[in-house]
Length: 347
Image 1 (spheres, helix red, strand yellow):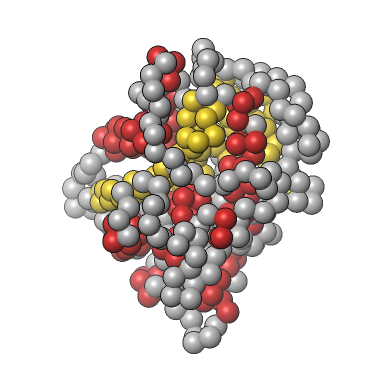
Image 2 (image 1 turned 180 degrees about the vertical axis):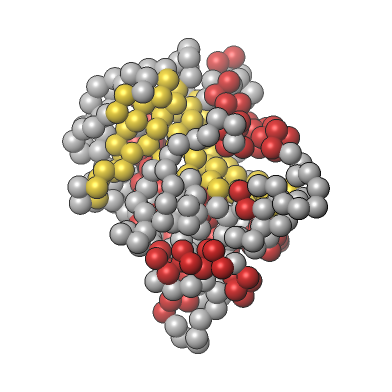
């Protein structure tokens, strides 16, 4: 059953490279149309006016005066009908990072490809540990998705065609958005009537099971983990409450039937997130009858940086093409401005 932890696991997730957001006290929406590059602020409960082409920064949630923002990049010309949206959640070990998308990166190339199809691209910021420990990160990310759905008309997006892509901790967060559902406990707070689920997930080398023994071979992430979860990753003593926290933060906990399609990309020489994390998530999804594709990149470290032994295979350009094709294939027509029919798959 979706969202119900297996093997006694409960629900909450931690994002390895820091991307998610925690449950925010109030959601903030904008009053006036946004111009490219504008920063918008407003009061909770206000209506968001339609945006224009280009990038606009909006405040989507406000927890105790800590405003969380997202960047919306709308195509030109603006869509004449609702279009899919691709949401990026950054990594950073739950303790650092921001919404900026590097133009030449894998995510940057994918964003450019879907924008060229007339789609909307969103990139979110969220609260960071240790000031805001887990589950603040996933709470914020879920709040951001609900905010987008609540303001779908003003943002020209189709609320039934939301894709998510995240790297490292962000990969863990978007996997939770795809798998945990309401029973994960993240659909609380502003816009509670909206779902935080997504219709397609691209997990770039994200943690999948925070309780496994392979984390002993990942010293860098182990240095970050206590700041986010109050404990290192891996199995704890029998009955340890911290183990329950890690179980709840693990995407594999929630895998069931009828999950959204997953594309999982992992470097085979990754020393930050053990490659078996991606292998195991792919296997769990397939075993439950879901659509999952695992791309193991040879000679690639964490972040798909080059490792010794030869060229990265496949390369970034090829990965970007495959990732864009995955999102386009599962979320909508090749060009929404052409008036073509939309894909029928919906969560």
